Picture 1 (cartoon, rainbow, N blue to C red):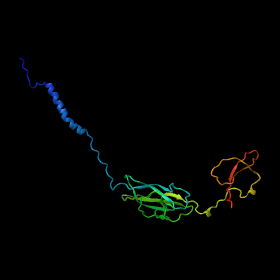
Picture 2: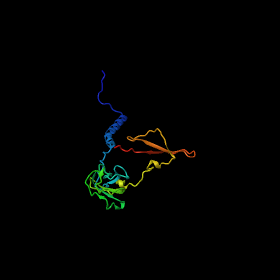
Picture 3: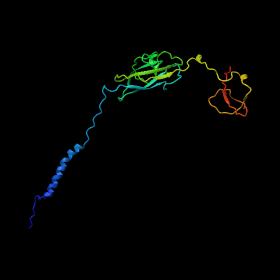
Picture 4: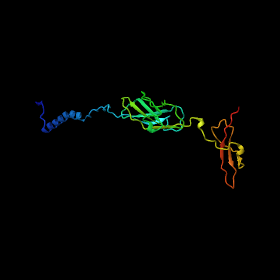
Amino acid sequence: MKVHRTGMRRLRPGVVALAASLAMIGTSLPAQAAQAQPAPTQPAPTQTADAAAPSVSHLLTNSLQDPLGIGGDAPRLSWQLQADRRGVTQSAYEVHVATSEAGLASPDVWDSGTVESGTSVDVVYDGPALQSQQPYVWSVKVWDDAGRASDWSEPGKFETGILDAGEWQADWIGAPERDLVGPEWTDYTIDFTASDISGALGVYFLAPAPRSGQPSRPVSVMRTPRRSE
C-alpha cells in the first residue's frame, strides 16, 4: 500500500529569493507611482493694486487718422485703451483740444473736464464752433475701472476745410465767353463713354488744330447745364 505524503514542499533557496524580490517590488510600486504624479498646477497670481497704469493710443477723428479738410460739424473723437491687466475697462476720460501742441496743457479751444463714461468711440466734440481752415490738436487721458489714470496720450490732429463760401478766391479755368476762343480752335465730334453725368446737356472736347505738323493736344471741358425755368 502506497502512502501519499501531504503538506508543504520545501522550496529551493533560489525560488525563495525570487519571491521575496517580487514582494519588495510590489510594495514599492505605490510609492513610486505617487512620486511620478505631477504636482498640482498652482493658480495664476492675481493682479494687485501695483499693476501698471493704462495707456491711450490710436487716436482718430471722424474715424480717420489726422484728417484734413473736415467740415464744420462737431468732429467725433475715438481712441483705444491699452493695459497689461485682462478685462480692464475705462471708467472716465478727459479731452483737451488746442490750436497747438504747446497749448494742450491749458487748452485754448476745449477742455471736456473729467467725464465719467466708458465711451471711447465717436465721442462728440462739445467745444466752441470750429474756425475755417484751422489746424487743431487734441489729446486724451483716461481712468480704468480700478481708478488708475493714464498719462496724456500722444496728440492727434485734424484741420478744417473752407467753411464759408465767401472765402473761395479761385477763378474758373477756361475762357469765360466763346468769342474769346481763338481761330486756332476747332470743334470736333467724338464718341466717348463716361459715368455719373446724368442730367448734363452735353460734354464738349476742344483741341487746337495741328501746327507745323505737330499733333494736337486735346483739352476736355465739361459744361454744366443751366436749369430751365
